[in-house]
Image 1 (cartoon, helix red, strand yellow):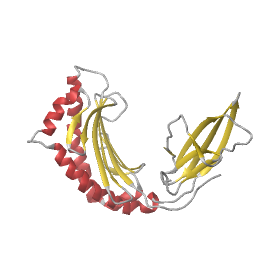
Image 2: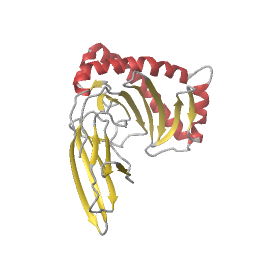
Image 3: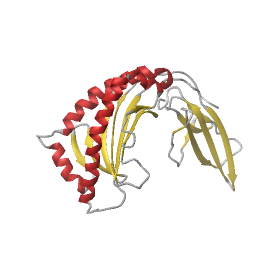
Image 4: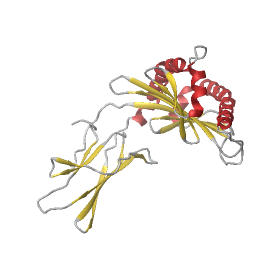
Length: 275
């Protein structure tokens, strides 16, 4: 039994990832920037090309002057991140090896018109420091980040306040503009395909509900007992992007089958998360 229907307005997110790595020979660019609108990559820059380029075709709407400006900004950011890697390495008393410093930030425009933003930095794949978006001050998440937090929160710098202005204004303005460019692609509607399978081992049967080929990303998938009682899953639900721009997920449960019980998989692609 499936519940698949309808159309609703969507939330959208604009996200950027900046990565700098120490030294050469890793096979990776020493510095790179990638931008995403939802799960679709829209921009790319690295220290090999020294060019900020559109990835999604509809980002060409910005024009040559925009991309030249973005390229110059990225070139100016590159030495800052190279310095960040060396600085944090010194705080860990590291003199060599492959290390990375990454900044992640973005903003969200929700379907009710409200907005949100985030900004955080990482080192070697671990959280380093993040911006508290209630107080707009930076919070260190490891001892070595305390000096950075003190500097960024100082009255002379107030980096959190500067980034508040960016996240609440320019980031949202850019997001709205990019949504306009890519609306047809971003808001396409593709209903999910569903495949249900089961495997019995002794008295226990494992049921799998695979949902795939859907767009947009939001979906609610759950197993029900006799159509009324939800069967909890021990596995965390992951919604994964597919190369064709759609999404896929799978929800599995273990049950003791009785002849009088039925176990439908319920899929809601219309109002996920609502009862």
